[in-house]
Image (cartoon, rainbow, N blue to C red; front, side, top):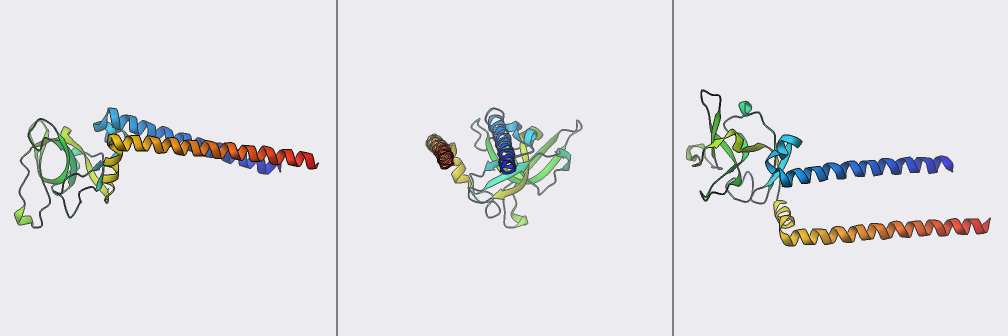
Length: 198
């Protein structure tokens, strides 16, 4: 009986330790994503972005999530998909865009600049985007996409979504606490019964 109890206790410590580790990493990721959003890829090696336009359909659909990784600028090639920040409306505000690389230029100071393009069904129709990107504008290189979950993420980032999420987290925490309390009370009651039977 003691061996079983000891194994159970060890396993509970391991589970608790893993829970703390995962919670700590997620919390660190969220803090960095909020306060240093453009550094997330550099620190963690990846970052997801929600696609909000139809410019890459049918390759990447609107509301897909693209996951990008860190990149070496000298390894980027024409035809690679990258995610970057640029002022697409020329209103002084930069948006996040995911497009193909159209051309790469390197000057005498070894500084890179890039032209991009949206999806075209035929190579003969390809027209480059109007903007010119520098290395610091690029957020990451495309790794893979998660279809259609972007709308959920955008909802969770909205004020209403944040309130709904906090309420649900509060309910889940309350349920877990009540279940643990109920389990403890049942164990104490069973222990009391066993003692009375002896």
